[in-house]
Image (tube, rainbow, N blue to C red):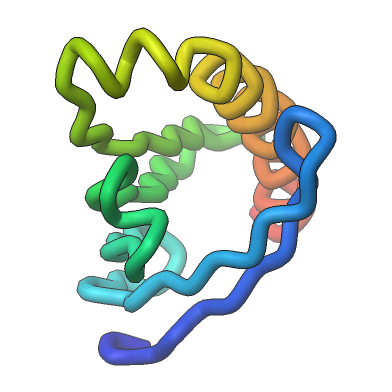
Length: 102
């Protein structure tokens, strides 16, 4: 639901991260957009989950928008790589769950 706060705890690069997101747009079974809350919003601005049903499967796309200057990028490289790996694994898990519905 738009305006809902999502709270998650996840391990990224071996450390527990507690994050909050504000849901900004929902189209059931199609789209969810969210904005990242402070302090993670310093690096991550927003994200989107898109689901496109296909015959017998679906196309699932997750995106994150980063706010990184060159200096911050230099110090965050390991974290960015860990997030990319996490997004790949999480995307595969979510895709399986969604395909089970379609």
